[in-house]
Amino acid sequence: MGNQKKIVIEQLDIKLMPFHEIKNIEVPERGWVFTIRTALNMTLQQLGHRLKISTQGVKDIEKRELSGSISIKSMKEVAKALDMQFVYGFVSKHSSLEKFIELKAHELAEKILLKNLNNIAENKELSEVEIQQKIENFACKIKREIPKSLWD
Image 1 (cartoon, rainbow, N blue to C red):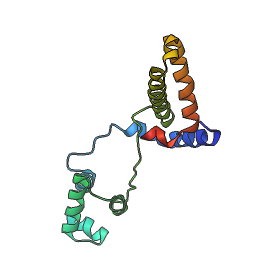
Image 2 (tube, helix red, strand yellow):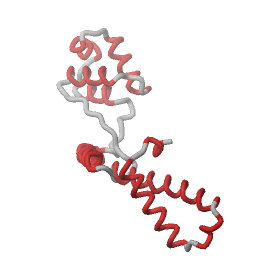
Image 3 (spheres, rainbow, N blue to C red):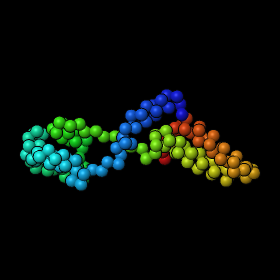
Image 4 (cartoon, rainbow, N blue to C red):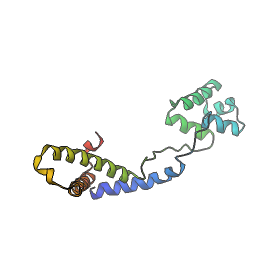
């Protein structure tokens, strides 16, 4: 990975790290808006007044949150009306973005090299260790460059 790309990935991994701690938090069955509003003993009308929308508008927000069709902008507005802050982010399914790139680079290197090795008869004499070493070397090259083809 180029030095600048490596720094960007490392910085992004640091920013995303706190989200790993909260990735298993479950959304309440009726959604965050409803749950927080009712926990505060706030009526639909009261939240609507704070948002400058109708009671039906608040019901629509609660429904859109449950269906997943609510916008980030709307969630930020609701959070502000509840004197809270809406936070969102992404959590890698891997331990970090760098590990994800390593995995994809290895997969791509293996795919390309094994296809080429199968097409070239003289490479049949390579041992399994030599083949794995070629894959690792090629994966390191791919990781350094992070080509767009990594995501095909």
